[in-house]
Amino acid sequence: MHVEQYNDFGNVIVKKTFLRVIDILTFTSGGKMGNIFEKYLKKTSLFTEQRQALYPGYLPEHLPHREREIDKIAEILSTALEGEKPSNIIIFGKTGTGKTAAVQYVGRELKNANQVYGKSKVKFIYINCETVDTPYSVLQNVGNIFIEKWEDKIPFTGWPIDKIFTTTKSYIDNWNGVVIIVLDEIDKLVAKSGDDILYKIMHMNDILKNSKVSIIGISNELRFTDLLDARVKSRLTEEKMIFAPYDALQLRDILEERAKIAIKNGAVGEDVIQLCAAIAAQEHGDARRAIDLLRISVEIAEREGSDKVMEHHVRQAKNKIELDCVAEAIRTLPLHSKIVLLGLTLAEESGRENLTSGELYNIYRNLATKISHTPLTSRRVSDLITEMDTLGLITANLKSFGRYGRTKVIELAVPWMEAKRILLEDEFLVELKNAKITNQKKLFF
DNA sequence: TGTCCACTGGAAGGGAGGGCTT
DNA sequence: AAGCCCTCCCTTCCAGTGGACA
Image (cartoon, rainbow, N blue to C red; front, side):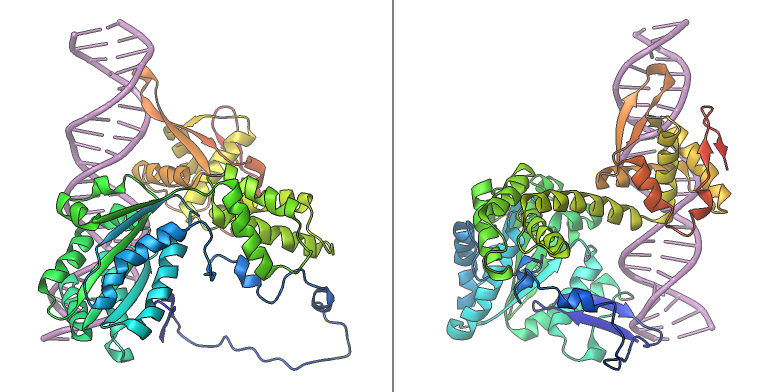
């Protein structure tokens, strides 16, 4: 059985294949014995009923300090209400600068305006290219929004690209309206699959008879357009916008607005809001980070039974977020990356720092063999090292030792004890808990 | 200045797994 | 059932690299 769920914008948010559906639990209520959840339920919450205003997916009624940008996007997209194709837009800006929120905000307004003033049908499709990162999956997601019958939906694999393109194109054309496709994190799509898919979508306008298609690309990478073919680049960048990071004062306004909605009156003071804003402003003006920090501070205060959030709760929240990020990144690594990382933690434990790729590969190979897994090639491990460097778990710097070769010098970027503890949670790695490396780079188990 | 080391990283391709078509 | 397509993970091959050393 195959199940897909779509969000308001029509993109897939859940995709599952079940062999059997057995996840239904039933409960009967109320015995006389105390329940383990009772003490948590009795506790008075510091949140209002709208605590979702402090969660990432929340789209507020008002976006402070983005009025100008919203206005510009609305101006460009307004032609869609007349049935004309809006210019393609490319939006740049660092994480948490409100790019996605601003675009989704305009999308929501466009939908409302279209019901009142629209002379033509308008469809606003949001796709996050972090997960939808191949030409096939982009076309499949777009196409399926126009296909109503479950049995006619495009499968998530199996069709040739030409067929999926033709099918999607004809559904769009039959729909007879203006389609705006938002490709969030478009740089990831281009880095992975090239710009062919962008060319295909933009070229669609030349063959569509009844409908028109526009693209809004959102990117964290200012220089990603360097990867584009000149034809794609000139069409995609018809309108270019840059979202600057928020400063501490702007972040404070954003937090105040969210706090009013999500946190009970008097539970959080001006000092706490300012501290959250200041910490986030130091870290590239990331509003998402500021909001997370505030939410987790409130959760910590609540758990302590405090009726007010204090500054030390914010500092605890900051540490918690940092540790949680590292732990999550390590837990979700593929097994062979974990073995490489474990090798590095064992080396640091034994006092060996600054390993070369070759040294780390030897340790990895021994560890993998010990747990009866065939080691990957050094070429593949080199890629795993680069991936973990990108994640910020390790630092790998290319260094030349002259006639003794050129290699990466690798170090852990997180505390080895913490990393080792999390790695040993993996059932495949448990048996390596006593592994040690001697000064001669040999392993002992 | 040429040689050499120990890789790096791009390119090409294999094969497994998911699915569709005939 | 066979043939095909697409994606993902991986291997193989190999040109290229920076800088110490002879």
